[in-house]
Image 1 (cartoon, rainbow, N blue to C red):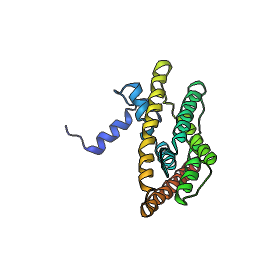
Image 2: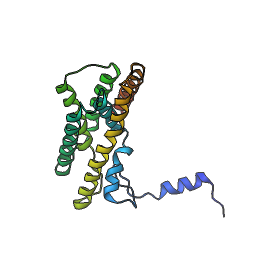
Image 3: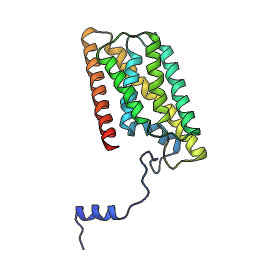
Image 4: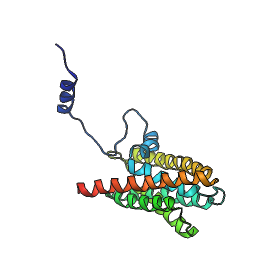
Length: 197
């Protein structure tokens, strides 16, 4: 008896199990699930890139307070989502991503307060939109702590890239192009979410 690939796929769809949109990966610990979680949510990836690029423009040493703000904001978002079940915040996160991407694309020179506010809002929405379905108690705490560590580490890479690219005139154009792509991709993602509702 032989099976074709389409037949196996149809059979697999007839035998469903529980599916979560933000669920953990089986076989991986809860901490590591949380740590990798932002990499599996397109909105989180774009927001992390946007915030990281915004924090790294110019000099990381001068922007050190932004790293403190980002860390505190992610922690506040994760604490909030642990105690309160809040949903449908991905739209707000995408709106912040569009704004930050546009700021990078036009190379806007904003005050430190406005940049700090954008970083704080972006990181807060990453944190508050990070709970994984089906987790309770200590497992949920381990996952959220993993997300905290993962977001912190993931923010460092785009910040370092942005610092390097903003040192020279012609490479700054590359950073601006990436910012425009982030803004455009976020607008498309936002349009997809709004059209589905």
